[in-house]
Image (cartoon, rainbow, N blue to C red; front, side, top):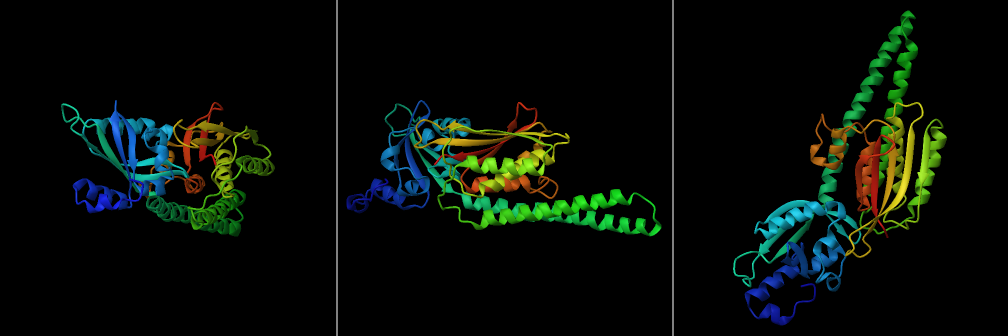
Length: 365
């Protein structure tokens, strides 16, 4: 399907010729596959698949579809969809898939068919149709973040400043009360407003930059620069770094925004007078069939309290953003939006330090 259609295929008037002409010219990425033991093997792809996924048709024909387009941490989900297809059901689901330039969001339709070669109507092949929703999904999430979270936090901190300023003026008039405590509260709220403004500005820079430009950097200097900066800003924190030979990743200088935000969160939300943070850069091998399918993971670990489940969920699922369920600030969102701009993923786990392991997964260049 990925080649230029011949005159015979279009002009012969057959159903097969017309169907192939249609598939070849639709803008959605289409894969035709055979099913053997529930595993989809690529028979052919259309030109839109080559354009969107970045894999050449000759390279992927005859290969396992899952090994090329499914990230290893999404394999269980893909196998469940394959089971549905093998049973004759049509799948319709939003999925994350791996392309040559990183992760993208798709509306996936799995459409099975039976060729009639078997004695029954058991599906032995099908079509996978992928509609690229990446920019639509990202834009919806960005609008929700800026509308709900930014407005909520600005209003709350402005109310704190206004309310405590009134109290401070009253206490100064009668020379009674804990004016120092009130002043400290105002100072903290003002500092949070300044930080919020900085994070909002960084988000603006992330969103204004084109996402289709391929860039690559060595992540180690960025991570080391963030560590050096936070060691100077918070000398009481115990900040460790572990690196290895990982190579370059698909990202640019804005990666620092994400790493810095995660380190800042790990320190800021740890009640310990000596918070512990560990940054590790590791390799994560992708599935063996995918060309250059290796990933680099930047772990930011701490020994502080677990990030609340609702805050993790709202990062994972933008549809969960509501006036009362939106996360406590812009730091995690800055990291999430930055990483997804590079076709990567932000994930949450537990660290052997006793706290969180927030990981940035980026495609190796």
